[in-house]
Amino acid sequence: MDITRSSLDTATAIPAPEIPFGVRRQHQHQRVLRTTARGTTRSFASRHDILVAIRLWADRYGEPPTTVDWDPSRARRYGQAWRAERFESGEWPTVRMVRAQFSTFNAAIERAGLSPRRAPNRLASHISGPDAVL
Image (tube, rainbow, N blue to C red; front, side, top):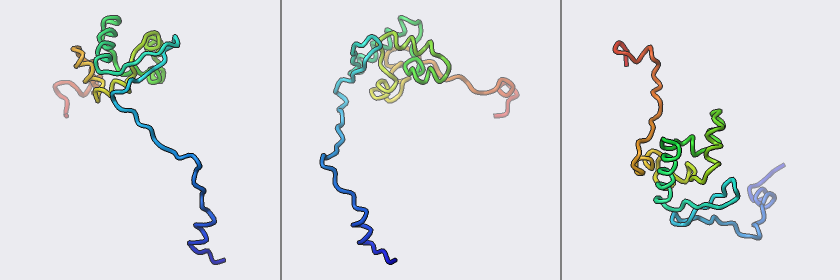
């Protein structure tokens, strides 16, 4: 059986969709809406709103938020459901919202006038002393 390129093209042609598809992009200045656990909608549109939320979190919980605090699915994966419940009990921006405005989560914490908690030092104690070979 001799199959030519033109016969393949016509045999497997996919009809064009009747409804055109398009991508609708949001501009950064548009408000981002999120539905809270109580069913209300809260928007964190501006950098200012996010900075206020960071300071409020620090006042309420005694320390600035971490990415695990504002990412409930990650908190649950790490076995820290209490963090997810704490996040869902209030109206907070998500990690994704913060990164969209500030590039990094720690940059937002610093911009709010707080000191971000750094990642733990992963060096084993037996190789981190004065005799350690680095």
